[in-house]
Length: 493
Image (cartoon, rainbow, N blue to C red; front, side):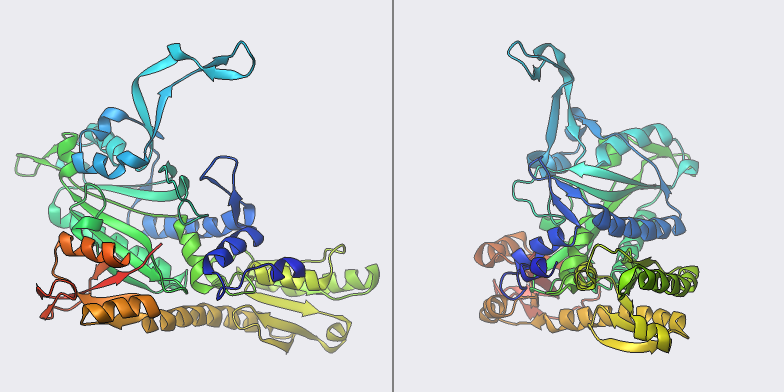
């Protein structure tokens, strides 16, 4: 393990390679035999499961129910909403046949006689299949609102992939809601982006900026898109969740009308919102260091690891017994504890392994500790070690886990805040982007033409128009035209 850690590329040397090394060496994920797709390994999936569990509870607390819709979507459904099909056309995987047959020379071939009458699209997102379904569920205002979420996989045929951040297939959740009024749908879209922001900050220890996407960056078919934008340690932004007000676009495309209280017919108002396994990438890139992962305790699969130092089987048995006694009250408090008493692995290997995996607290006990009633405690975020009394260890560990959760967030927030730079001229814009990176807070004239010109010139994209951005008279840094507020630009993943 020590050798493997030496092979972890330093962040400062090559951030991209450091990230890839860390994902693989920490046992989170690996590339699969299918180009562009990944295998999420048990430890990585355990983190995702914790994210799922927390988010699922937050969704249900706001009145949502889980459902499931088909993986395959008839091609004709995508033709009904022009902006939507244009947004996803280049990323769609298409099923054309439904059978294989044995080839004369061996192996199998696609049976040419088994062509589908209508091709099926492998789900890139579910608006079309869901709104075709909602048509059967909605007749009157009494059937509204519908507040559904599904946990699923989706396929978007990406050509340039990176584990967790961009893969051809990935896991996510997608909420799809139907409402009687425009105001209710807008309130829902805003509510869910705040749920995502709360999750990011309270559980992922990830500070985010909440804002509107520009018209050019909106979700295909949306009237308005809200986003949470996070800052990674290398000065690049990562879109970490989106919530969309879809207006009546999909209801009109699939003719979903309802009888209002007044007895008239109206089209339903819609939202959709989602986060994906991309959050795993955010978690890794925002907090980790050259020793490996740094996991916020709230999402760590193992919050405390206990390692005995011993000579011989008899001593190991004594240490294990004592560590299990210490572990029991911690587990009773809901803290996940692992006692690693493997006798075929050196303690130094274990230390390096759990640092790499980002386990928040490490407790080590040797013969002297056993005699003295002490134990060595190390916290992963600071790597500071201290000898503490076994008496009161539960309260001590609880306090440290709480402090780590806060400290990791505060460190990330200080970095994020330091990486927000207000600029007033095009020269300042370019200089900050090249020398510092981060979020650039600048005036923009509100036109797609200028937004695309800035992207063409610098590769920086308009990340969001912050919800808390005040009105402020100014001039666009690129065009010199009047501007009413500043927006956030950055290079991004």
